[in-house]
Image (cartoon, rainbow, N blue to C red; front, side):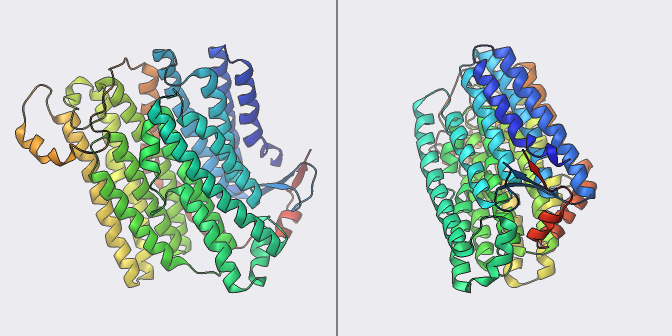
Length: 522
């Protein structure tokens, strides 16, 4: 089974090369992209079954023995995230295919989009299965290159400005990450995460703290943790709908994943949990207050994205097996639900010609299917029972209550307030856009939302466009996945609990060398 591990990265890269070769053959590009992501999804499902019932898989690439070469490492967490990511990437790809067919690829030029999209997928998968810090850095850089192309598709002035901000911030984060890797290698003589975990105790505490904070800073920028999240609300909403959806669902979670790996494996004995708890609270509150102040749906979702990163940092800072498991479950929930909401807003934009809640009216009667596709993930993200958002938040609060310190209680209250304000922001958009009748004068409603009139991008309007069935079907499929997270919450949460327990157990380099699955790939 270890032979399947390199395919998680090589298949998207090969697919990207093929789509580049067939740049003028749209149907071939679409077929290659769909086939590639489907194959990765199947492989990830197989690997998840294998590692959940046995030992993790470790593969040394390029003929170098572990730990000297590039090590690809697949455990339960990596396999689960690759599986969920491939599902999300496939659904967003289908959405973009429908959009491109309807618009003549004005928004997502197919000759550029498909190679960039598959390279982005390769970077995401490589980051999740990286067994050493430098390969994780390479995964981030692959993401940066591909995402810069995707975020500027169409070449409009707002997209170029947003792309410049995005790439500058990403480069700063990458420089910090690379500097931290160099310092770790200079201090410990390795970048393999298993070896780093074994040798970290040899360093003085102050040196460990410096290395720890440098990695945390780099990953916090990528994960959009407050106060390093300033770039996200202005960058994501300007991109085409499918690009925004996949960015919101996946890219920040790669940063969260890196934080989880380093906090649970590399720096178990270096406690910065109090700092993380304070940052988590600030991220939740500031992010959701930003959402309340917005009048444009993409910006509302961008700010809620920031605020809900705070829940994941909160769970990571609790640092118990139950909390880590709850964090993994909530991260899976948020990847799926946030992506689905952005796809639903993409449908709203095409149907109504705008995503400003000051201009949206009468969509319940005009587009009842879109109303359902928005409502289900919206109440899920808001944390209403019995949806997965409620399950994940309850698990986080329960883990914090078991610790029971005053700061934990403050975080629980902050999490509840954030959840209520998230629900308020999303349901306000629902009431104005779907329930308010088109063509009617409602002065009381207008007065209540008058304070939003000067919000950024509140007056932006586009033309109405036809919605192809494949776009609706892709969004409906993602809504079905969000419901499945609730229906199958028991087995999924049990797996996440096993992941939480396993992450807090050290992985020794001897385990990789002696494991029967640790083979050298040619």
